[in-house]
Amino acid sequence: MKEYSDMLNGLNDIIGKTVTVTIDRKMGTFHPRHKNIFYPVNYGYVEGILGGDGEEQDAYVLGVQEPLDSFTGKVIAVIHRKNDVEEKWVVAPEGTDFTEEEIRRQVYFQEQYFDFDIQS
Image 1 (cartoon, rainbow, N blue to C red):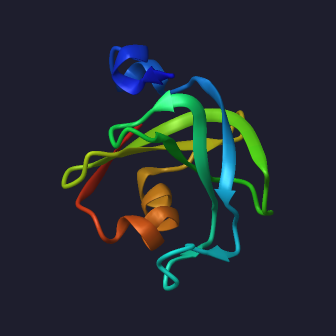
Image 2 (cartoon, one colour):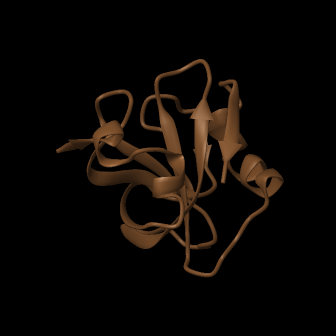
């Protein structure tokens, strides 16, 4: 498994790349441990890439309105948590773009607990 920092020289290297996200928290479900967190978007991980927490790289899937098992799309942004070791990738269908405010609004359900910025 590659570490995120080993695979990429910087955020600009991942933005625009095509990745496959394995969905382990489907749109319309609740977090397995924190029952107050409802997932309005699909959320999962990119297999084979380690994130800052030593687990596989987490990713939000935006622009799809149905629960999925997996999704292949473009990384359109990276959410950098200033008070955590993780970054979250934002993945969307090819040709789909979201403003920073649209991304912020769609990931707020989980990112509200962190100080973060969005890089795209």
